[in-house]
Length: 339
Ligand SMILES: NC(=O)c1ccc[n+]([C@@H]2O[C@H](COP(=O)([O-])OP(=O)(O)OC[C@H]3O[C@@H](n4cnc5c(N)ncnc54)[C@H](O)[C@@H]3O)[C@@H](O)[C@H]2O)c1
Image (cartoon, rainbow, N blue to C red; front, side, top):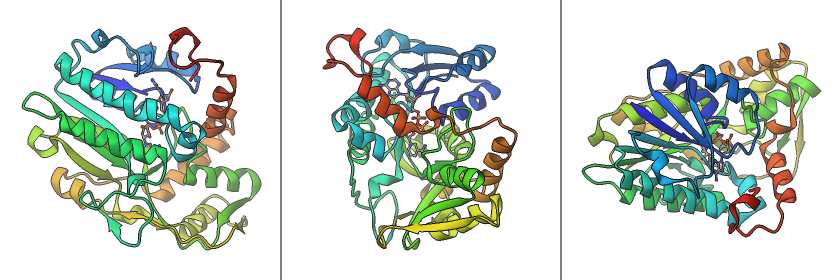
């Protein structure tokens, strides 16, 4: 099967793409490479993965010819990045990904998978499932809601769109993100012997390891059409809906038991939990990697100096730099577009 992965040099892409190749997929990646990782070329070359440096908003539709499926990961990839430039976020995360799905259908691809987020549920008392009302609180979350709506509507007898609402990722990737909660906590305890935590730590959040995210995408590619057709699935596991203070304690214990937690801010009770019954019961998908295993993996990579606190690992800061470099472009002259 030929799979076209947008955003495939990003955090999830760097785990997903080798996994797809290993099981025999023929993979092409399209990415603007905003996060600039040189080693990706060597790695993908050796895997026979073609990288097209282009933008989901402008690429030539003919690039999709001959492909069977799209995994659409390209996006400004969390709430704080989205808040840096809400118009750009809308342009890429909604208009851009809606374009990819329309083109995929037009060119005759069979399947399209978009990476949405559990953040569409906003903060709430109950545990949200795919039938719950959404409550998107940021441009990033709103763009996910709109792109799900538009793209899932495209489903017909030839074309199967699927939306995966991912919990917050953790774990090691060659394009590392230290702007994600568990990864950041692990780094801080390892480097500084302390981690900062917003009071009172009673807030719940859902998490999922990046390997399990990649497995869920493969499941969505391989499941029978009727099971996934125009469907939304939360991706994670009930056991990975955790209170932040328990999470911080787990990181502290696993990385350095003599480290400390430093509390800050006024008590913030904004919580959310998601239900993962649908993906478990419909597709038989279960996560495999625990939070402790993810923390240990990052700790090992830090210890071996495979990983460090490089500027590119702080995604928000990296995009801030790009936005500051942005000249006078209004999205008209492609050659001027920095972001
Ligand atoms: N990592 C998480 O915790 C998480 C959780 C929920 C949803 N998601 C979603 O999963 C997807 C991938 O996330 P990630 O963690 O790998 O993020 P990432 O920021 O590491 O990767 C995103 C990739 O998209 C590329 N990109 C951005 N805009 C583009 C454009 N206009 N054209 C082409 N390429 C573009 C970037 O260069 C980058 O390589 C995103 O849609 C993100 O919103 C991620």
